[in-house]
Structure formats: C-alpha cells, structure tokens
Amino acid sequence: MGPSSDRHPTRGISAAPTPPSDPGPEPVDVLVVGGGINGAGIARDLAGRGYRVLLAEAQDLASHTSSSSTKLIHGGLRYLEYYEFALVRKALQEREVLLRSAPHLMWPLRFVMPHDPAMRPAWMIRVGLFLYDHLARRELLPGSEGLDLRRHEAGAPLQPRFTRGFAYSDGWVDDARLVLLNAQDARDKGATVLTRTAVVAAQREAGQWRATLRGERGETRTLRARALVNAAGPWAEQFLREAARSAHGEALATRSLRLVKGSHIVVPRCFEHPHAYIFQNPDKRIIFAIPYEQDFTLIGTTDVEVPAASLQGLARARIDADEIAYLCEQASRYFRRPVTPQQVVWSYAGVRPLLDDASGDPAAVTRDYLLETHRDGAPLLTVWGGKITTFRKLAEDAADRIGEMLDQPRPAWTEGAFLPGGDLSDWVGAAQPRHPQRDFLRFVQEVLRRYPFLPPALAHRLARAYGARVERVLDDARDLQALGAEVAPGLFERELDYLRREEWACDAEDVLWRRSKLGLHYSEAQRAQVARWWDGRAGAAA
Image 1 (cartoon, rainbow, N blue to C red):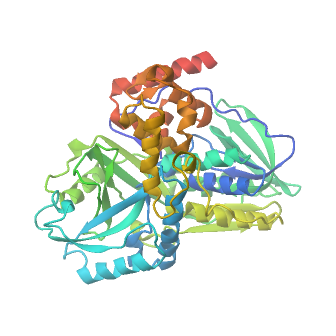
Image 2: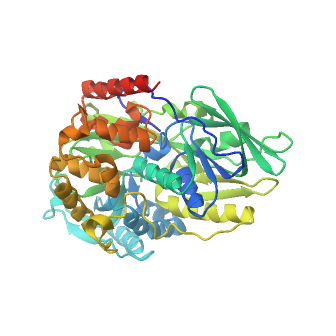
Image 3: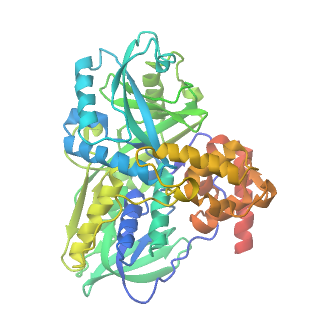
C-alpha cells in the first residue's frame, strides 16, 4: 500500500505519466502485470536471460504492498512455530545473497528478544534459535547468543523485570527502493517498464496474448505477448476473474487469496543503540521495534483479515485506531517509557496476498509462494503469495518456468549478481564477500573525498539511496550551487531531476515516501514546497 498518515503527507501534482510507448511491432516474449517486488524481480530475471519483456504497473512501482512491509530480510523466526521449515530455510539461504547484492540498500541487523517466561519457555527459544542458526549456511551474519539485559545496552530501555534475553541476526532493506532497483536492472537489460499503465484486458488469441493497456490519461494501445505473468499481488485473483480471458472469452479459473492487512506505526526514537527488538505478545504473535531513519522507531506489524468484498479499497488501506492501540499496548509491555497513540508521527498499512491454506489465524497463514502455470494456448504464470526475502528465488523459479513453456530455457544468473548501485568496486576496489558493510563504509568515505562540499549527512543519505550510481546524481558538481536550488532541506533540484528522468517518479509523493523517506523528516510546509516545485516542472514539460 502507499503511505498513510494522520498528517496526510502532501501528494503534489502529478507530472506527465510514463506513456504506454510501443516497444516495437513484434510481440514481446513476456508481458509482466504488476510492479511490486515480484513483478519487478521477474522482469529483471527474464530480461537478463535475453527475453523481450514489458512490465506494466497501474500506479507507481512499489505503490502498495511492496512499500509497506516491516522492511526485513529475514528467515522468519516465528514461522518455525508453525513448522514452516522449508520456507524458513529458503529465506535464510536468500538473506546473504541479497545482502551482498546491494550493500548500500541492505545491511545486517541484530535483534534482541527479551525473555518473558509467561510467553515461551527459554528452552523453546534456544531450540528455535539453534535451528535458525543452522538451517542454512551463514558467512556474513553472526549466530545467536544469550544476553544478560542487566548489563547489555539493549536492556536499558526495557522494564527492569526483563533481565534475560536472546540475540540473533537478520537483515534490513529499503523495500520500495529494492523494487526500484529491480525495475532499473530490468530496463538496463532491455525491458520496457511502464508505470501508470494498467493492463485492462488480456485474451489468448492465435497462440499469443492480446493485451489492452490503458495509460493514466485514458489513452489505450494493444500489445501482443507470447507469455503472460500475473504478478498483481492482492489483485492477482481479480485480474484473472475480470481481465484475463481464454481464447473463447471465458474467465480463467483461479484459486483464492487470503488478504491480510499489516499496519505499522512510527514514533520518536525509543532507544539509542543500533539493535532492533522482537517482542512476544500474550496472543502468541510478535511485533518488532526497529531503529528507523535515525530519529524514529518503527513498530509493527498487525494481522487483520480483509474481506474479499473490500478489494476495491485496497489501494486506500489505512491503519485503524484499534491497530494503533494494539501496537502501542504491546510495545509498552516492554519499554520503560510507554508508547502512546499521541506519539505516532506516521503510519502505513499494506495488504499482504497470502495463499489460502485454511488457517483460522491470519498470523498462521503461510508466507510461502506458489507459481501456478497454464499452458493451454499462450503460457500464463500467476504468482500467489510470497514474501520480500524470497523475491529473487521466486523470480528465478518463474523465469525457469516461462522458459520451459516458451520452449526456450535459458540459464539463471541473478544469484551472484549485483543490483544497480551495489557494485562498489570502482570506488573501493574488489568487493569483500564476507564484509559488504565494510565496503559500504569505505564507499561513504570515498563519496566524501570526491565530493568534499557535501555535508556528511547528505553524503550518507545519497550513498545509501544510490550506491555506486550516486555519480549519476552528482555528476561533475564541484559545489552545492551546482546541484541547483535546495527545494527542501537536503533535497536539491539535480536529485529531483534524476528521479524524474531515471526512477519513474511522477509526483511529490513518489519522491517523499517511496524513492526516499524524506517526507517523514519534513514539515507539512516543506512537503508542500516539493509539491509546488514538481507542479512547476510538470507544467513546463506539458
């Protein structure tokens, strides 16, 4: 879902949308529907194998579920309790693959679990952490350990009754930018990426798909594709029922999704140290409290069933007062200083499309994915479920199946590949496979050396956002004046032009809440300044 807040972040005026341009008279090999993490990942993998790919996203990249996660690259410790060993192992295997692929965007994070004997016994936690440490090979991340919270820095913000705890490792990611990097890599490898372009109809015809695409202003065009990938996330079932048709015009048979809303709150920083917390709740669920954007703490998530009848409202999903109260109450069970609804400075909610496995508890529904293929006529692949940590493996599996259905199998390639900006070797020399974060810290210092006029905080933000591609933003600038007007604190015209030109940004919300989280740091007036600048540029380009 897109960001939501009681403070109503300024949306701005939309710039000219990406037009549904014609990639050529010949049919594309694959039309990918959906610009979330799975659609972008599949488009990237297919394009890297040499297939002719077009990705169409009805709104902005990562505008819904894929920008509304807890932003973790993790195996999912709690899934062990539901005996999801295969899923956890698959996710654990992917953690370090992803951490190496983009050290500017993903990094290790140490989690602390205070022990509450009323929740789970210590022996059960130790067994779970032992499995978590050993289900997959680890090279980057340290294993788990017990903690004396009376002496460890993570104990200071907690209530005195928590004297014992456990620590383990997972990873952190900027989820919306992860989607963007996959889309950029797909484009770099020859794919066409269209945002603000909906696939409103797709029908099998003469062994191909004939699809109708509609742009934001209502303009339409027809495209032919040899294969179709339905990666529409929460709308995957709806797409098959309402847009996709057989050669005889019949709706395609489909399975059901469980739609589960997960909401998060952001409050002023609750602790000073760099660790995150995982808290056990009396309802047997867990929530995380994570250092966020230097000055804040991110707390989440909830699991609230969303009726299928409310599908049309998914794009406007919002946290409700009961969810805010729940997150504040559970966090306050652990922190010395209570967390209250009045402290919430921002919130967001996303609807997760989960496979319907007949679990009564939404928290127990599997987070694994299923790739469903149909070869009756033109090939169709639908993505059901999934989680952000396993997106690369999902994309690899999907590309393998598409290749088989097109009778043109081609080898996988993404496991050892960098995402855009992730290869820092031109800045710091050969990558250290076991120490990607050391490479990143050296990279930040090199950015400061090459661009000494940058304030350190700005240099660090740009390095995090763009990695090695920061030089495409800064180019040959020798002073801050060369970056153009400072539209809002630390946000200059040159970066905004880059976001328009290279990252499909079409309005202020794209910039402030997905390409960055600057909206969280700006006042309402400063967000309005960005919107006015964008409005002026859009008018000039019209």
